[in-house]
Amino acid sequence: MIPKKGFLFTANLETTIFRPRGDGPFPVVIINHGKQWGNPRFQRRFRPEAAARYFLERGYLVLAPMRQGFSNSTGNYIGAGCNIESNGLVQAHDDEAVLQYVATLPYADSARVLVVGESHGGWTTLALGTLHPEGVRGLVNFAGGLRQDGCVAWENTLARAAGAYGRHTTLPSLWLYGDNDSLFSPDTFNAMHRAYTAAGAHAKLVDYGTFGNDAHRLFDEPAGRPVWEPELTRFLTEVGLPSKPVQR
Image (cartoon, rainbow, N blue to C red; front, side, top):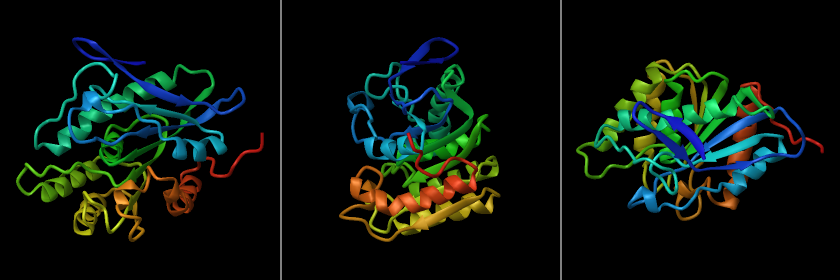
């Protein structure tokens, strides 16, 4: 349980930690989960084992936090209604708490951090970039966003919010989306990327075509690793983070 201190109360974030062998200090990756339908309180704890294995092979310390109000994390989920820009920023403050915790760990190198997220967690990751987090070298967005069918023109709102994030972000990012994503069409994620980069942010978009029955599942499925691994490895090299497996 990682404490997230607020003005009125402290929330505790349920977090799974994967630690490599050795004493460290290890580079760090934070992996942000998505949002399932229904009450976030009933969402299962996030254990991204396939992705964690990739990073452990390269000597990373991996943290997978549940954000406030999800699963066994205390506090309440703050959705912000149809204000998707605010939604992401609220979620990103949970990552700030995790980064503060990482800085207290003697076996963690808090100056070499990567933040990764899928779906709602990918949106959270992009929002974190606007907060200029110390020690973070890059952002990786797997099918990031939040589908809000109950909000008028939600796709346009999502793109505008991405542009707002892009105006305040200096960190490089890697975006991975597929054509048969059940939540975000190619028109939607391409509009998001155009708005983000037009605002001045640096982001590489990888459209890898189709994946299985739903490209939104790429990050979760073991079969997805051969698709994303080459792109992620290349990105790690570009941002100056370890990209090759370590011998132990």
